[in-house]
Structures are given as structure tokens and as C-alpha cells.
Image 1 (cartoon, rainbow, N blue to C red):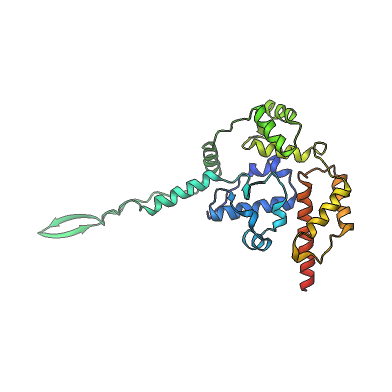
Image 2 (tube, rainbow, N blue to C red):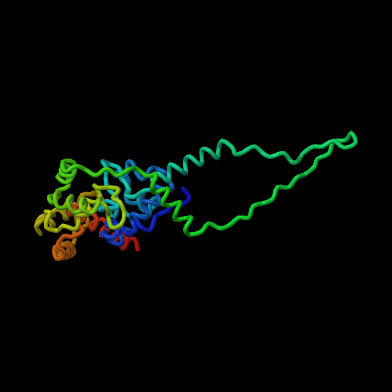
Length: 281
């Protein structure tokens, strides 16, 4: 698609506002890449991509997209982008296919009349209707109609929500369901579209429900991650930096962190990239 329309209300949701600026920028790059590929907001085989490919193709680092976030999720080896305009992509495909079949047949140049035995063409010019610019109200009306054509949201049962929450370690399902059920299953002023993303967002806000690691677990895993790649065996995980990252996350109540091992991986990849960049200069 040549255009990627993101409604203003999407940027006012809890999923978007609850994320860090780097995560928001990463999500925007993922959206742009999927729109260019017209892949339905799903990047298959993404887990096999190298960091260089992520930077060249999507313009983000592998560490940034590996971190858990309500704006995208991992389904096996594929990345699924939140709020991707699947319906708009289908509409663009239909219009492209219809355009390839050809438009209306051309109108005749004029009416042929016979005068004195000779055939001549009488050209008739149709009046041109005035073209007016689309008003802001008309544009908003079209957007509301397009939004209304989307899929109908079906709220989850308590069993479905509990089963999903159990898989990601979220324990306050009843509280989560009571909140959104009493609010008409709305996120802010908008109708909810993805209840699983809403559960992940609540989990990221709930520091008490997050099983935080000990400092020893954090440090040991960080050292394993730093030396996992044979090309980086000469590099040692900086203990002072790791300890500072741990205490910073703990002081913030682990809010926004749903996968502490993924956070270490992200920090390690960023640090390794900086070290390699300094070594080349």
C-alpha cells in the first residue's frame, strides 16, 4: 500500500500510550514495512532474521523487536503487528484487481449525421460538473463507515481469558474482566478490538503480578546471553551496567516489563552493537 492511514484514536489507546517511545517508533516501522509488503500485519519467519536484516529492511534492531510489547506479539517464529489495517489492505487489493480489468468503454467522439450525401461528425461536448474539495466532515464520515465494516468484537469468556492469562503469568483476570465488562468493553472512548493485547497491557502495568528475578538470576542470565554468540566470546557482560539496569527496573516496580529475560537480551544486543561500532572506528 502506498498510504498507511492510522486513525488518531489509535494513538490514544492504552496499548499505545502505555509503551515507551522506542517501542512506539518500532511499532510504526513494523506497520510501514507490513503495509509495503501487504502481508496482513504478519511477518513470517522473523525469528530467523539477523540483526543486520532487521536494520536494513525494517529499520529497527533485532533487540528492539525481540522485547515484549503490547504493540506487537510473537506467534511462533512470526511477528504479529497490533492494529494493522487488514480491512484497508483488502480494499486496496480489490481496487487494484478491479482496475486491472479495465474501466468503462470509451464514449463515441460524437454523433454522425448525413448532410447532402456526405457523412460528417457532429461533436457534442458534455458539461463538466464542478469539482469540490472533500470537506473534513465528509472525510470523517467515510472513516466512520470504513471502521464500521470491521469485524464484530466478541468479548472473551472468563475461561478463555483465564486460559490465556495463565500462559503469560497474569493472575488478576477477574479484576481485569470486571473493569472492562462494566465499561462496555471499551478502551478509552473506543470499542475494544483485541482483548489479548488488553490483558498483556494490564500485566505490564501490574508490577506485583510480575515474577521479578533476583539480582543473582539477572546477572547469571545476562552473562549467558552476552557469550551465547561465538563471535562475541571475547566480550564480557559489563556487571556494573547490568546491576544498574536491574536496580532501575526494580525501583520502577518492574512496570512495563513482562519478560525480564527479553529485556536483558535487548540490553545486551544494544551494548554489543555499540562495542562493535566503537571497535570499527
